Picture 1: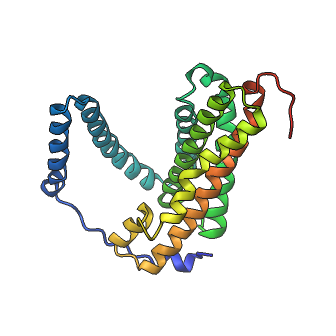
Picture 2: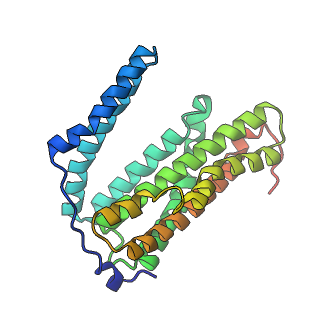
Length: 251
């Protein structure tokens, strides 16, 4: 377990990127947008994505500064509620006809599994002094809810596709769960060989000992694999009365 004594070993000394240097990162972005335009690809859509990314990250920077300074349980709880609601709504974007009917199931699946995972990580693995320590809870919750959102989204998309081919619900459920797990299982194989994940890379760039960063990344990989899987499992169980076309329940 990563106890409080281990957490105190972490000394952040981030290098601040000057604005001019940061602007250089947009030079190849502009070049790619020109290529997309010349090749008659939707460059405006890509430009909108880049602009939205820039605005969202600048705004979240200011918001996180406020959240970290507040260090209040009510503020953190409000942030978590917004995250869960947004993740649940976005996850059902590929089934617009049933989006509102399935929203309760998605909310319940993401909330129940997410709350349990977040409690395990913050109170037992990291052994934080309070459950609402924002520097840890907010980033970890973001990882958890984003993974769950993708898992539920992949599951519901594959499930509805199989059911549209008149595949029995139990078989379609198995196929959907397997599809939802593919990204997380691939990441388990690739981590350390193909890529250094975001948390580990960020910590190393901030001056954290690579061995400590590796422990955190192991915790994150276990957290994302299990939470993404269990949230998809719970959603597929809860969604059956709506999607099973009056099949008898078989659990």
